[in-house]
Image (cartoon, rainbow, N blue to C red):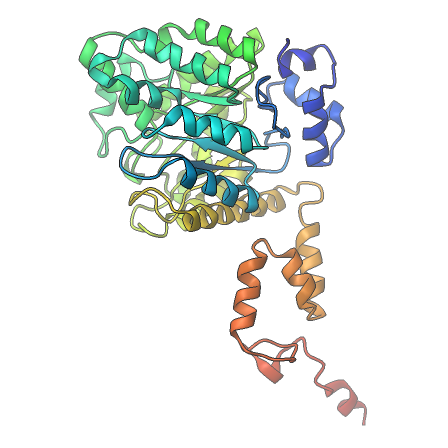
Length: 423
């Protein structure tokens, strides 16, 4: 089997490319050209039978990922499946299973069977959960990637950019290293004195990816965990290395995304996107947030949506949601929904700002419905119809068309003023 990238290079329109093109209302040939240039990925493991493919590219609509998964302290398979269904209902474009505790294999298997969108994982989480950092050897890093690929995961985050050279750079930071996968890798290197296996054995990972058509999401293990550390030397050093690795994988036929920051103040988000373009090439940029201020625990879905809108309007293709539970606890089903909605709003706002063809049609339809006080149509068009209906119902307006904000003084209501003026 060839990968989606290899098929594109041969001009072959695969089933997955057709699905992705239909989703974005473009021609399959447009997806093929983006794939050939490294400007898009169509994550589609050959063993993910329930998949309906999407394309991730800054040239297409901004896509949103939702993270779910069990921790060593909380959640189990049934609860994570419920979160999956909430994520799908809220229209997440992709899901990542970040399980680092419980029945990790069983959880991933159950999610894959029910997941029609691309599924991503961070294989090193399972490696450390299985053996503990003191017992891990180089093979464990690689075999975890193989295990996930065989099972059907569409994209994997691998922290190949965290090298031993980064250790002194991390030590200069206010918040050090906040990426869980990055921290596992860095601490293992410190403990063993060895180089990162995900870097040293990168060519083996390429072979695994080619065999199953797994897309690489090259992880931002050195992303800043505070706005103080934004766009610092550690982050930039990792970007440079990721750019080199991305080129290596892409040349061999592996689809590649680059993961990005982290905590970035609003005035530096564009700079961060520009740094990615400078050092990491054309590959789709997958960003966590970015979170633009550090003072809002409980509201970080908002801080991330602000950053995400600016990031996506300046080149980010894929937004990883941040929930209200970020920095506090494992997210609940309600948190999952709130995070997805916030990220989707950010992505759509960016699509409008970029002038993406057809992006503002949705807004224009909503404006027409508002002008006509057509509540049924407004609910249908709302990004969260359930919440919109709930707020409307709580206002107890009866049969009146206007809402309780303005009542009879609603500026869109027919007040008869024009008739009175004529008389």
